[in-house]
Image (cartoon, rainbow over all chains, first blue to last red; front, side, top):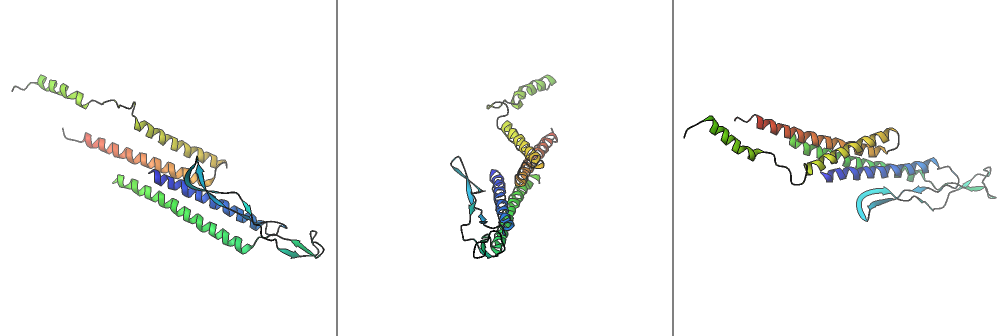
Length: 130
Length: 96
């Protein structure tokens, strides 16, 4: 039984991590027009408890995408330099939407595993009822 | 062999020690006490997580997990109780 209960905890940790990832994607999309904004990338790592690998996942430290910022031509912008360009953000909406969809699919997979573990333990208990 | 009621009573008294409940070697109840404590702890954890989620202090994932765990624990306890009660009633129905 403890394996099934552990499965519940593991998939819950996976769902939390994917929700966290979706939050970073949302931050990126919200700041897509912020000048000088570097997109954040979520990382995942295994939870180590007292030197023991638990198998649970957690979100690791947030890293900033170091790729070049897009140069936007707008001479009327207060931040524009002498050539009329200013630094935009390096957020690519297509990449962010793809990332969000990936987070959704991964979340669904974890949800399915949660449901699976619950159904398995339920049917195990149903055996006793007959 | 003469049959008297005193003889029956005597035999009945002689068989009584065989059916007396024996104290567990590992103290009061032993494993069962631990099981009950585990059960109570699971229930309490579920309750606390639910309260924390209501006030916005806990992650909804933690709430779902705690409630699923509590549900399983309660269902296990209920199933085992039903089984034990059923077995007891089966013994009571035994023709003597």
